[in-house]
Length: 252
Image (cartoon, rainbow, N blue to C red; front, side, top):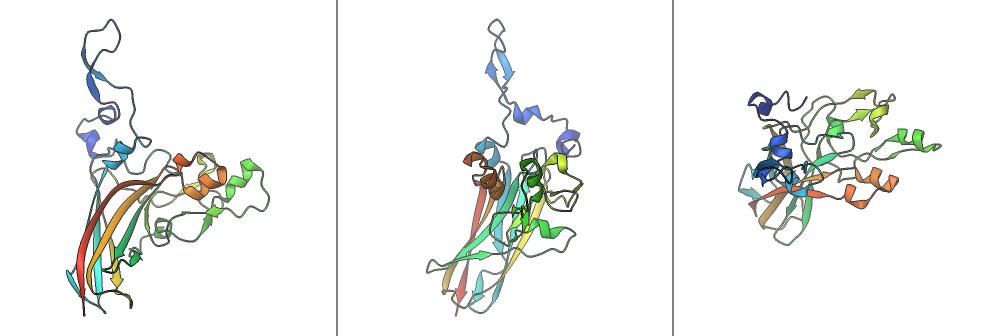
């Protein structure tokens, strides 16, 4: 459906062009040599494929900021290559998020929370200290289960997801127990998401050059869930999809 509604479908570019790239070879020992589609089905378990999908840039609204001033940084995220939304597949399991950090001239690091936009369901697209996935108690036969951390990433980070909800309106990772879907805040094919970060200079900021880095990270399975279920560590490892940096000066 995501592909059918996107630009690649209209252009006649099918899924296998990306997921089954052609290379010279033989499709069988007795076949003539030619261009053969490779049955490798590159996707979320291929790190190189992930790292080529989203382009990212970051810019401040001012290059010189007083020590008691405010700077607004804008991050642009462009789905440059995927013919579907990112993340896709087992959307209820995946987590894609934007992490922005500033480092001053003395090496102090500051984590910047994203500015809210105010759309319905946005609370599920900003990392929070919240519990979820309580319905895991059903197949595991657990009593008085309070759930696990919903996101497992720094509070205030922007998340690109479409939450799945159980009958109680609590986020679930179990498709079979899904009763409704939340806001779809994934990045569509050739879509650009703009995120802003308004940062008031902290009292302990050092004068001089400030470097701000935006990173787009991905996990195949939300880490608190992975840890609870004791799945292999590679399923919840953080994959850096892309990053970009910018600078500005803080003056007295």
